Length: 129
Image (cartoon, rainbow, N blue to C red; front, side, top):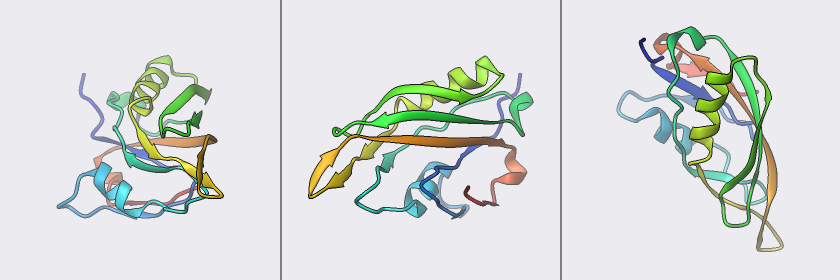
């Protein structure tokens, strides 16, 4: 089966990404996400590989970004598709973050990550939640 071209990741942290053809989806996402010190900021992301049948599906993933910048306690909140859920959990577990800070000290923070699967025609732009 053919793998869907890309998976658009939309963080609840609020971003609008316009993808440049010279950059990878992942690099464009990293370049355009919010970089406030009071929220975790992704510094390395992995795009889940999913099959074409998943195009149009959405799910939410909840996890804690530890003070060390690692995702922990990853839990899918809303999905009826176990294959899609497993692919997203596997990818997100490889992400790295600059952790949120409070008074100059790294602190753990819970994150909810909305995920929407798009085909190659949806890669030119998408809006955040």
